[in-house]
Length: 314
Image (cartoon, rainbow, N blue to C red; front, side, top):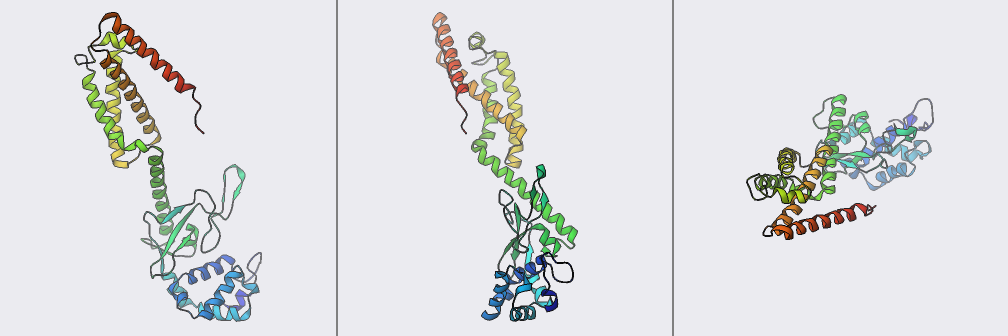
């Protein structure tokens, strides 16, 4: 960085001179390094003048340029750059939830065309932790700055490899964030393995020669079929076994598997109601049992009707 080049306007200027992003990135990176912390107070104050002028060197006093240019030679910047590294591990990328963040180096984001034709310029949703391995300040920056300014990415030897690692790390973070969001949305997820075991046990209870399998007429009065119940149990047990294996590997369920889980939970709840009614009427005979079963079915229909009429919470 020479004095002649830095006196050239950097914004909206055609001709020789340093680009704004180059100046800002160089100064911001150096000021986050341990080398900057070792400077005397007066020299550090000169760099802060550049920051206060928004890194536009065309209006910076000559004494500031002289002090900062003398400090930022190639060897110093090489040493400063060597302090920083992106490590592809969980926690080194942040999600701001929307495109609202700016790169700590260049001050801008990755400009992209958003859906619907509206522009999404100079804002980041995801930024990457550029760790200072020498004990200086960490920086959260855009992926483009890491690649464009050849900053270190652990495991990469070329810019193409660096870009690939950054993209892969973001995909891994996105997958983990989706899983965390799913678990937060479905707090009962830990019961998925238990549901499978419930179905295994229920399958024995509802076989034709077992306790509930022998009450086919009573089950019919409750609007169901013993045959249909048993085969639904077999089907849901198979599904829950698959869901459990997937959940124990991934610790979440996909959208399709979540719907299968909800259906299995719903059927088990319905079966629990029927079990309760059959147990309550087990010792009854004739008309008394018939009336008790009919009342139970009517009460359930009214309860379900009330639930269906309730407005959904916003």
